[in-house]
Length: 161
Image (cartoon, rainbow, N blue to C red; front, side):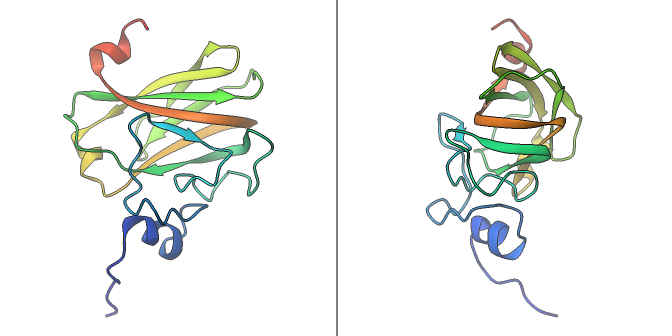
């Protein structure tokens, strides 16, 4: 039986498992920054290989029907939601759905003309996973400029903003 090499999670996700589109050599654990903002027009190590165009188009990158993000966060209590905010370079009318680690699919709703928002449940089981996978699904082709992820207590995620 072959042994798995001892490599960083980022290395394994990019080179061995071929899940991410770009190699993030300076972020071996794929930890999100404190701001939670991912500029998808840059060569972000969080972008999945599936769904995202190879090249950015100006300040955005096209997501075709289904794709997502791979990332890690610090440990959180199980009573949290992951607030997802997706900024587009133009408004759309088609629905966009998000799910975390294959869990319940939630629809992202318009916050403004070019911003969609929603909250997915972040459980203690999710936090035990070595890597989080947030997947987006839509019948449309989206031109995305950024995605922001922020863990929030349930009361805030479900309350008014």
